[in-house]
Length: 91
Image (cartoon, rainbow, N blue to C red):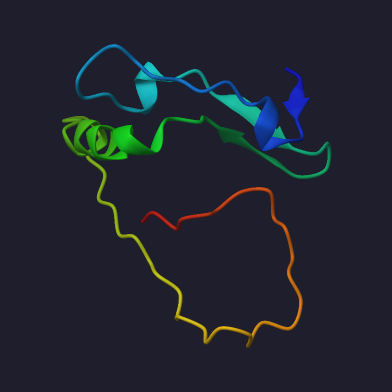
């Protein structure tokens, strides 16, 4: 399977069902040849439906916890590092 190196190259997936889970998505290898993960890109406004679908899985229910970083004062960041994507820690 090919590895996608840019988030811009991931296809946006929007399953037609109201609530959906990871089983309804097509996963893509994202990263580089040394370090990669399976990734799927969904519209932000469908995240709640994805979480409900994942938590409703009777075989393997999932719990989510969204962590937030601390707020920084304007101008306190010395240099900007573009990660190409925003990462949420879901546990």
